[in-house]
Length: 134
View (cartoon, rainbow, N blue to C red):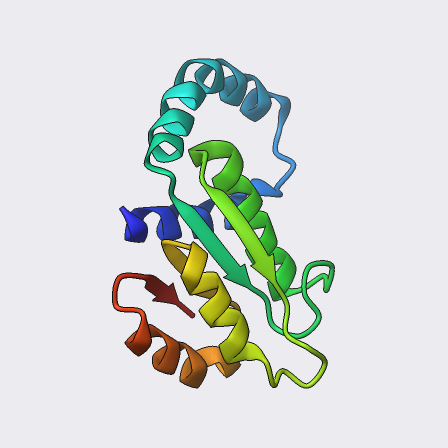
């Protein structure tokens, strides 16, 4: 389930911001009324929570952090997941602390950027029941 949510979040983030034609809008609206409640209810009942930890710059960087934010926003809307967001301080020295805070409250912790790799490995080892992604 976690892998499916993560994969869907990435796909939705990649495809969600394209304008598209009016035909795409029309075809999206009809199924959304039928499918959205079912897709939203299942994860919400399960209480699936995603903790998104940005790299320096956070939401609004007009780059990869914003792409991750769009994925989380789409996962909330389409799948009914709940989410929390965190951003490291200016020098990034509190990455591990933020990951641990996210792990304490999340089923899936997503760290945005390769600079998190070492901290994710350390925090994941201490939290075997939480899923992590970089």
